Amino acid sequence: MINLQEVIETNKMIEQENLDVRTITMGINLLDCADKDLSVTCEKIYTKITTLARDLVETGEEISKEFGIPIVNKRISITPVSLVGGACCRTPGDYVQIAMTLDKAAKEVGVNFLGGYSAIVSKGMTKSDELLIRSIPMAMARTERICSSINVGSTKTGINMDAVRLMGDIIRQTAEETKDKDSLGCAKLVVLCNAPDDNPFMAGAFHGVSEADAIINVGVSGPGVVKYALEQIPDADFELLCETIKRTAFKITRVGQLVAQEASRRLGVPFGIIDLSLAPTPAVGDSVADILKCIGVEHPGAPGTTAALALLNDQVKKGGVMASSYVGGLSGAFIPVSEDQGMIDAVEAGALTIEKLEAMTCVCSVGLDMIAIPGDTPATTIAGIIADESAIGMVNQKTTAVRIIPVVGKTVGETVEFGGLLGYAPIMPVNTFSSQRFVDRGGRIPAPIHSFKN
Image (cartoon, rainbow, N blue to C red; front, side):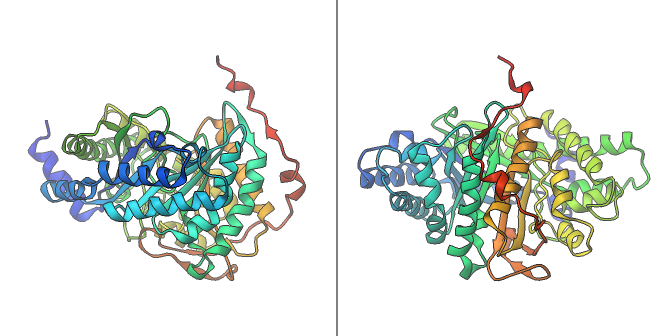
């Protein structure tokens, strides 16, 4: 039971500290939509999505009004499309037709984003996988709400370097195809290692094959709430600091659990997981970077930043798992640059570099996220960055990701405006020494020794 004091606390967190439920995401299995005829496949996909998700947005808005809890996004994740289109897609253009059908369905039901234009290629690529990957630049250019993710490695399988090398080219091509929008297509494209099946956050969300026919996943957020709590104990030792973060994360997650259960009941769709991630926004006071500053670093990037982030991530998870029966997704603290004003400030102050962000990804939820780089960055350099981040995920048995945006026509010292939750970003310098010989070798990097647990 939630008592009166908890209700008052929750209201305060919402009104003054930027607490929100970042997303209700409905996962939908599309495997039963596969057909040898492309038009039939598209028709089945459109019908299933618009039937199952027809009340998703309205239900989210009703819950938000009744409980007074902001629910920022309503989203859909689907079965990786390379599995659905394998029987009917013979060219990249065929996959683009599916992408446009998905975009039409997303607009019909009113969701913000639809994720799952994806392929899982951590050990190898089928012909279908490769066709989908090569279709991504055109698909991102011709759609508004579709997000794409490619999983190129895992702790169990190693890293598919052929896919890594290809994704370097695909990211550059996507940037070119969407250059009239400051290469925005790359903001909807992420390359993953150890991708979870139940992630509600974009751009990496997809509906794993181990999931039920339809589920409800909820992603909570609340960096501002944690920041406020830490501001009340500026001189606390680490024991009290950790206890405060843990207690705050518990309260935040309880709000998400309440929304998830209510959405599940009203939609008649099973509850999947709560993702405990602290997801920042460009709004002042809603920043993971500001939490790190409260912990004691002058700017993210200063010595001690990685330790502070590790502490934050661990306490968020410890508090959250006590508040929900089912915790999944990514869970922890996101460190996107463009979506976090404090991170932007750190870059502009010269405190934060891509190399330091990479070190921080060893202990945070995901990886190099929403980082704008010069538009002339070679595809091989981008592939090298993906390989580095995948290695961190593979060896540390965690999810890592790269969502990097080579902004065509821009260079270091300039900024790019994406708008909305995607915010704006300074163009960050990239190491200019070549990794071409490394990424051009091809083949797979084997799984680490500790992967053998059968």
